[in-house]
Image (tube, helix red, strand yellow):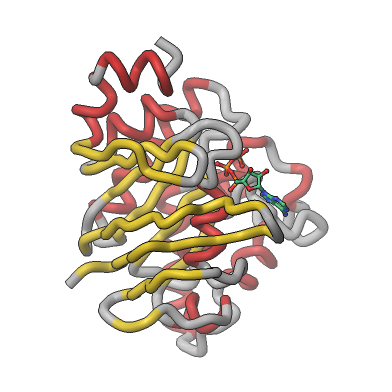
Length: 235
Ligand code: ATP
């Protein structure tokens, strides 16, 4: 079964046709990257898939049945989004942000296990539990944003530009973390402007340009493609 089947997705902002008939699938267990420059429509795809932005056309199946229209129903069906620029509850503590991530769950034992799993991935968060999240470093905020999403125990994790604003060494660590999350059985859809890094770790990649896919293929192959490098990877 596929985690995601997207057929002819269209999204508008008034007269702006931001996503223009995009089709793709993500198999369970896969790590798929969508890359493209500023304004290509990457975030809009993520918002549409998480039920935050209404679709103007197309069909989306999540684990074999139609995507619900309300964001909390989407979360309940196993999809969690790590939004661009983290969007943490910055006045709340690290602990409270984690609680918010688990708000739909009633299983205290499972929730406790998932907290521990987040602390294994990001030990620093355990030391910062009572700290206001707005005062964390950029890298720590990204760790918390990912942990908050993991607290809903997603089967499909959407990551919108997670490397944004991180120092190169932290981007390395982040990519390793994404691979580790996937190795623990979570399917991952990653969108990135940092195209080279995303494609290197992706099973498959799609190049998005002005709301349409212009190329797709195995991630590392796209990362090495001279034409793609020239047009989208800054070299
Ligand atoms: P970025 O990395 O800059 O976020 P992106 O690839 O995620 O780029 P989107 O944010 O999805 O791109 O934007 C796609 C298109 O939709 C752009 O032309 C953008 O100007 C337009 N757009 C995005 N949000 C809105 C909005 N709220 N109202 C009108 N147009 C919008």
